[in-house]
Length: 189
Image 1 (cartoon, rainbow, N blue to C red):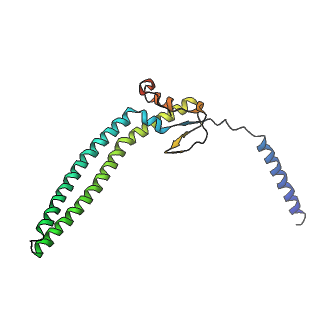
Image 2 (cartoon, rainbow, N blue to C red):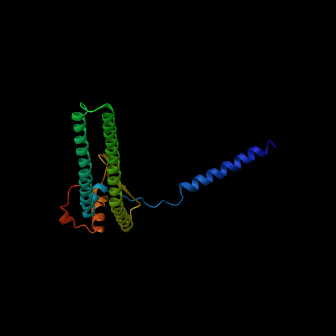
């Protein structure tokens, strides 16, 4: 038994050293080709996003108009309550105060619904655009042989700390989306 353990250990050591040597001389991995795109730049030049933003702005104005009408109605009733509560009896004042509280809650609820409607509409309008851009990025990446494509920045914080302009595929993606860069004004990335 004492002789078998060193024999097994030597055998395992030999297998591991041969395996490690084979790995070091093993098959080469394909070259990694990484590109990047400025998603913000692409979106900024897309006419579809400008149209979606215009539609959102229009909806927001319309909803704010309704909200302002409710606020004006509330202000009028509040002023009337202030003026009339001095001469009204206690039960009338309580009734009017309850009515004002209901109006306040109604306005708060309407404001929440307004925000939800705007958010929902924004998602409905922009998701197809984002999907279209993502599809174009995928197509360009495949056509140009990129292994990986990164977003150049996320808000004000860059994702890539160094970017060789040669691997920027933003303009290619815009062309794939049918955007005429000369007409778009070719803004700085």
